[in-house]
Amino acid sequence: MYDLVVIGGGPAGLTATVYAIRKRLNVLMVTKDLGGKTNYHLALPWIQDYQVIRGLEIVNKFRSELEYLDFARTMESVEKVIKAGEGFKVSTKEGSVFETRAVIITTGARQVRMDVPGEKEYTMKGLCYSALSYAPLCIDRTTIVIGDGDLAVRSASELAIASKQVFLVCQTGSALNSPLGKKLEASKNVIILKGNEVVEVKGDEYARSLVLKDESGNLKEISADAMFVEQALTPMTNMAAGLVTLDEQKRIIVDCANRTDVPGVFAAGDVTNTYAEQVLVAVGEGAKAALSAYEYLLPTL
Image 1: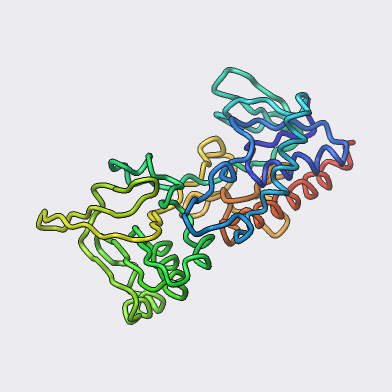
Image 2 (image 1 turned 60 degrees about the vertical axis):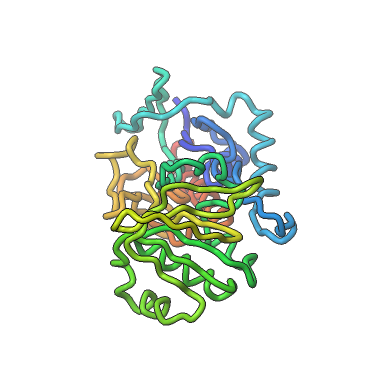
């Protein structure tokens, strides 16, 4: 039986696993990849690497360490976590079952995609899913935000501070009925395109324009320097359904020490209800989760 199983290999999971190793816990990370969302970053013609705070140096250091430590990881996809006696059983799609005294869930959240021609081709090449990370780099640029919820309104508002012009492409504009939404509508450099949906992403080396269709079926094309899809985040919590309490957005509810409402189960990063979906935040949350798990396990070690 393991002391600890960490599910997920993104920034939070990598950090939690390395911290657990240094606490001399018998730990296993179960994940399909190492690095998570840090494997992807937006490429734009005017952006240099030094301009972006990604936390990649920390994440890559932890990833390199775990690539070397074969005994501490297995590249499988977790399907279910259940309570079993005094501990837990972690089952994978590949058929493995790991018994453990404690679990840290760090499976992250998946962006809701548009599923239109050109999206896959230009993802991270002028088109990405995190305006909040790149807004400060869009000074005097024309940008587009695609989305109909609070996330899109927040992203467009941040971009409006730096960008020369911001287009918000939305179908209903329902999220605009808020103080931030009303401020966005009043911004002189923001154009809100209600009743529009994206049907294609076009470009050359980078995404350069979007083809939109309005409610009447008419097509038009708008160009921009950068485009951000901010439709929604889907937390990867299926394996924990019925085990821990989730919020209305299906995120795992944790306290300030990354504890869930089930003793022995911890969670960190974008899969939780913690504020801000940022790499450096996830790194810190992963460290906290590992320290909390260690404290929980200490009487049994």
